[in-house]
Image 1: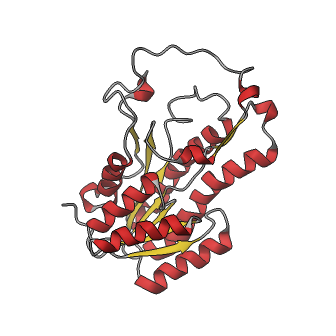
Image 2: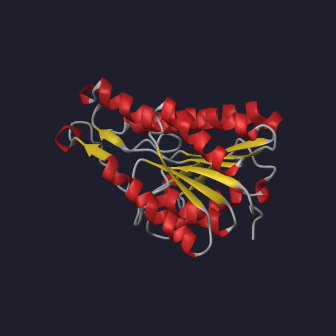
Length: 260
C-alpha cells in the first residue's frame, strides 16, 4: 500500500465522481480527508461511507471560486487537523456549450471562474500550509483543450482546462523549492455526473458542427468510458511518496481516446 497514513488532504468537488472515489481511496490509505463541495447532502453521504470503514472525513461547504469562503474553508481544515499534505483541485463544470458568437461573457466567466480561478485559489491558499513539510498537489484538467479540440461549443471549458495545465506546470517549478509537487491529470470520458453541470445550446451548435467519423469504438483500450475508481488509483499514487520524483507532469488517463 502506498504510504499516506496520518496525512491530511483537501479535495474539491468531493461529493461525486472522481472527487468522491479519490476521497474514499485516500481515506482507506489512512488520509484524513476534507470534502470541499457546495453539495452538502452528497458530501455528507461520502463522509458517512468513509467513517463506516474507520476513516476520517470533514465536510466543508464552500464556493471554490470565492476567495473569502475558500480562506475560511482552509482555516477550518488546518484548525481541525493541524496540517495539510495533499490537495486535489478537482471541482469544475462543463458550463455552457455554445458557439463562440453565441456564448455570453457571463457564460465564459462562469466556466473560467469555476474551473480556472478556483484552481488558482486552491493552490495559492494551500502553499502557506504546505511549505514546511512539502506535499502533493494534483489538478484535474482534461484531454479537452490539451490534446483534443473536437468538443464543439466547449471553447470556454477547453480554455479553462488548457489554463489549468499551464498553471500546474508553472506552479511545479515555483513550488519545487518547498518540496511541493504539482501534477496535472487529464481524464478522457469518465463515468461521472459532470453532465449535470453542462448547459448545451443544441440548436446553435448545428452551425459549427464538423462531422467526425471514428474507427470502431472511441476508447481503444477498453471500448468504454473509464471509471472514477481508475482515476482515483492515479490520484492515490500521485498523492503518495511513491511518486516523490514526479512533478510538473501532465498525465493522460483516457484509454488512448485522445490519440484517435
